[in-house]
Image 1: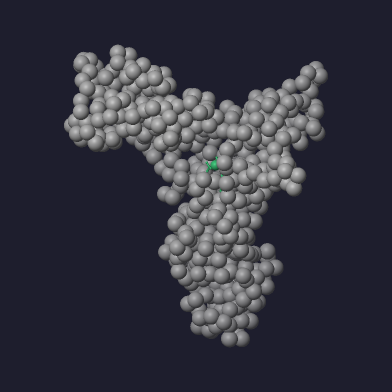
Image 2: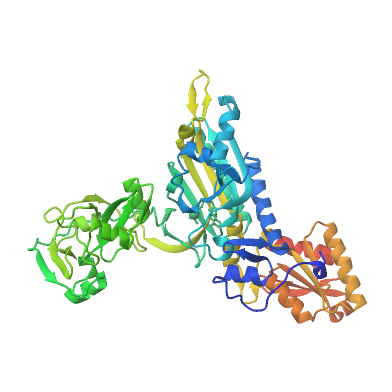
Length: 566
Ligand code: ATP
Ligand code: MG
C-alpha cells in the first residue's frame, strides 16, 4: 500500500471525547471515528487490525473443530420468548418492530438462534459433538457506552456454541475452547490471565473470563501468588473464615447521632472503628425490597447476593423504592426489621456492633446477631487483596483486567427451555448439553493498545499490526531514494510482507511521527547518506533499536528482523 493512497486521517491533538489511551490513540492514528454514542466506523488502518485479530480467531476456532457460519442480526421475539429471556434481558436489548408491529431485537448474543437451528437440523447422537461460530456485529444498548471500542453499543464479537450429548463431552468441548482462547491471546501478543467467573444472566454451571491485565480495565481480579487460583472479584472466595469474636456481649444502647448518615460520620461521631459498625444496603430483587448488612469497612458483592436470592431483576433501590418500603434513610438497622434481611457472615460473627436504629437521628450500639437481630446468613461482601487464597492459603493480590473473552458451560438451560433434544443409541430423547464462547474482537484491539504504547503512539504486537513494515524515503523528490524504496517495496510485497510505502510529499519528521503513532513494528528509512554506503536504515518500533542493513539484501534482512521481533 502507498501511503499517499491510504485513507488514514491522523490527528496531532488528543481528542477531548476520549478518556483512555487506547481510545485516544485509535482516534489520533485515524483508525476509527464516532458515528453515535458507542457506535463507530472503522477506517482502513483500524479495519486491518480487526481483520488480523479475526484471522487469528478464525484459524484457532477452525483448528479446534468449530465451523464458521453466519446467523442473522435481526432476531424474532418468539425465539427469545421460547427461552424465557425476552422479558428478562432488560434495557440492554435493542428492540425493534417491523412494519406489521411485530417484535424483533438486534442480536445481543445468539444462544436462541443457535439452539433453534440445531434443534431442527440435528437429531442423532451420531451428529455430535457440534461446534459452530460466527464473527459478527452485536447490539447492546449499554447503560454507559464508553472507552471507544472497549464498551460499544454496536461491537464485533466472535461467538461460538457447542452441542454435546452429556457433561463429559461438554467438558471436552469446553477445554478445547479454553485452549483455543489461550492460543488466540498468546498469538495476539497479550499479557492475559484466565480467571474464574460468574455465570451471570446466561446461566449454567462453570465459566472463565480471559482478562488482559491493564490499569484501565473495568474488571477487578484477585490472584494467588503461590498457586494458579485467579478469580473475578465477583466470584472470588477467601481462605479466611469469619471467626466468632470473643468479646462479652454488652447491653444495647440507643444513642443520638444527629446528621450522621454515612458509616464514616457515625464512626467518627461515636469514636468507633468502622469494623465495629454495619452498613445497610437496600436492593430490589424481582420487585421485593431486600436489606443486606455487611461490616462498615467492607464492599458489597452484588453478584453473590443476586445469586443467593436467585433474582432475575436485581438493582439498588431508588429513592422511590426506599420511600415505598418505609425505611429511614441513613438510619437503617436490622433490629425489628420487617423487610427481608441478609446478614454477611462477618456481621453474624462480630460482637457489639453499631447499626441504624430505624429512627431518624439515632443509632444502636452493642447489637449482636442472634440476640438482637436475625437474618439469612451468607457470604455477601467482596474479598479484598491481602486475604488468604481459598485453595492454598497463599496471599491474594489484586489487579485490574479487561475482559476480552469468556467461556461458559451452559448445560441444559437453553435446550430444556426450548425443547432441543437428540436421540441416543436407544432412541431416547435427551436435551443437548451446551456451551457458549465469546471474544470481543474490537475490545481485544483496544486492550492490545492499553498494553502496548508509549509517548509517541501505538506499539502493535507484530501479529496484529496493520502493516509489518513502513518504508520511509527521506525525500519523495529524490529519484534515487524512490527507486530504492520502490524496489524494496515490491520485493517485500512479493514475499507476502504487509508493507506500507510512505511516498507522501511530507517532511521526514512528519513521516516518522506518523509511523510511530500508527505503531508499525519495523521502519526502513532510505536516505542519501546511507545509500552512499550501499545501506538503508532500520528501526524497531518497540525497542527503538536501529542500525544499517545492506540495500542490496534489504528484503532478506527485513524478513530476518521481523522474525526476530515478537
Ligand atoms: P461485560 O461484563 O464487559 O459487559 P459481558 O459479560 O456482557 O461483558 P459477553 O456476553 O460474555 O460479555 O460477551 C463476550 C465478549 O464480548 C466479552 O468478553 C467482551 O470481550 C465482548 N463485549 C461484551 N460487551 C461488549 C461491548 N459493549 N463492547 C465491546 N465488546 C463487548
Ligand atoms: Mg455486558
